[in-house]
Length: 303
Length: 212
Image (cartoon, rainbow over all chains, first blue to last red):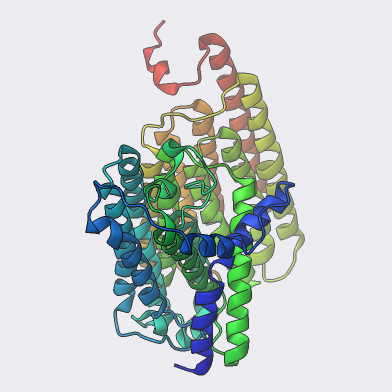
């Protein structure tokens, strides 16, 4: 790993909470409001970290483990992405399965923690989250298959690194389809608007937010930070597919990545202000649409 | 030019998928109009040099497929007051998956067809995919207007296939085809309107109960 890669890892860790902030700010400005400051999540995290935690008597260790496992799995998943556009801090052939598995593990831990509270609302949210994930995960793998076919590499660090820049002139159409598909996945996995509304205050309509209703204090801070990191992670994926950065020098590559993720956050905000949340039974259709786009990308590769 | 034509062909497939995935009839018609514009661009992009033939074919296509027909269908929707395809015979997820399957099949078949080498290798698979998706829409939707849309997409697929031979097909024949389609849709629009006025519904499954 180059020092730029390490620096990028640090920037990602520190700046992740600003990513949802940018999305919220964009949405506020576009809908004619002033909105919360971009750094609002930092204030929230600071406030939550100083608070005590309340545990319900019905919960067990599963509830306490949830946020920690979620954040840990996301942090490990970050290591597989080539942040400087060349090589990932960690990686081996087939690590894309591990990457998807780590994302699934984080979700699983949180869903279990939600179920552990015994609250019917959280059970409802958990079931919805898992339903959406069962549509999102095949799409993620279809995107990976298209990337593998385009680059001939079977590790995330490999295929998002130098080979991707080589593949773009040859398979640009297919890769843009994959990128669009990944952006839809970003919206679904991070509970953004067409799938879930992060700003909702009604338990019945929440998906992600309702699972964490019972978490408080530092636990909630871990979850919020994890959510921001996950958004940033998917942002990095989208940017890496659209902008191969292997030809740029290390520092420039990292700067492009940061700007790209910020731009993705703005795009999320724009989507949130022009679209309403989809009805729950229409969400699978959106994700199947993304899967169809990715498989069209695969077909183009095989052509 | 080659890459631009490739992009246009990909966008045509995406507009097929968009029509497959939307419930609102107006968005379907918008998708159809967008496809018409793309189809009008193609003769210009595929022609080795700009000829009167290619330009007039493109302009004629845009005028009929992107302006007149969508406008006519939009009017039919307004008159008949139907907005959504609520319960197609195959659900929207199912039809999207079938659409993906159709695209895969189209590419598989096109690679096995004994075609003369053309300048644009995507043209035949995209035309086959459009044909199949049009047929899918035509057969699985209940609303008569959506079936007209399906017919038009099917026809777009045939038009795309015809583009492989633009150089050898006389201009008049193509104009004749465009006119045929236009008249066909015109008649269908009038029929749809009358069905709606007579039975208060455009659900084609209910037409099986007709008897004299």
